[in-house]
Length: 226
Length: 43
Length: 225
Image 1 (cartoon, rainbow over the protein chains, first blue to last red):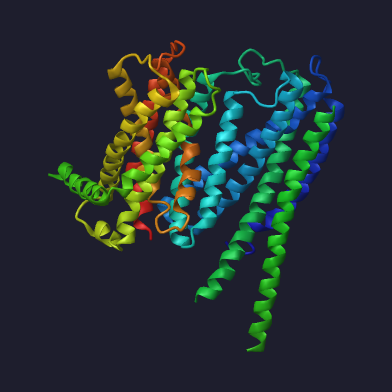
Image 2: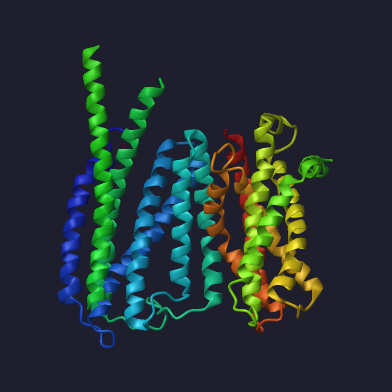
């Protein structure tokens, strides 16, 4: 990855677009979207919660894909990509959990319930926290890369099982994009989509920035090896 | 309502915290690179 | 004779473990202490629910799993004989299979001690269906050792091996543990769970997924120093 690659050059544009998108999203959240009938203004936390949860999961999926490609190609770029994506995913799932917990407190009068999506997110959070801890604690970079790539693959294979088992345990979460309308008005739907897109742009901006940073870090480190 | 405010605070603190973390790493990296350049000039 | 060859490794590991016994005494002791300490969480005179007992049983088993696989994978490492395993004329997957088998045997041995402890300390006496119970234990243990043998090699040569391994392995095990707890609670005479078959399915697919993943991915881990 050279400094002139499209990825590096797109970072400022993505950052500006992401920020603008989030400002527009604020307009949609607070002015355009109607106040929900039963939950009142509290429902607006949903516009943070959902994009966080989605992008968190997508980041974890990126870790999975990058790890797979790394195992095949041994390209260090893929390893850096999985680290950057794991960090973003960990941050987003933590925020999704925090907002979800606040929402649960307001809506169901409890901080935590055994809900499949909530529990799956928490379990994912633990797994990827372990993943990052593992990355930090192995000194040999070659072993660290191989091991964390394997863990990155295995962790995502586990997701369906975690979800299924958590659902069999118990559930009260509302189905948002369920088949029977899910109770979202069209304005709310638009707002959610705007938020998801805005966060997505910002996410890719931060991700690219972090990738470039990890690349520079590796290069500086390599200077001392030779 | 207070929960909503807390939720907002949590989200922006989280994102801001991560960006701050990245910026400190970047600062350390630039310092290191500058040191390397200086020592390369001296040689 | 390809399918027999990995048994040499299993026999070798078992001999080494039982030559001084330390490899099995530690996990058994830790598990027994766990069961005993958890028995203190219930006030005197009250019964421990079947679900709580099952959770404690599987928790003790998971801790035993960590210790067992750390021992199994550090044996070659501490004697600087890992190159020997890498050079041995068999696919690396056989190392995984043999370690998993050894781990399975040691885990079953440990559970042999945990079981009476559950009965004595947690007062679980209305067990139903010994054969089903054995089947459930074997099914869940399969998943446990599949993960343990795959990731046990991860922390090789690392100072804080046990803690690192447990941080990585425990969250991965959660679906399997949920299944084990539900099935165990049912068999210990707890509430009727009509989902028993579905839980069995989850435990089975967990074992299958991780066995498949291990067969593909194990060489990547074990090859690296």
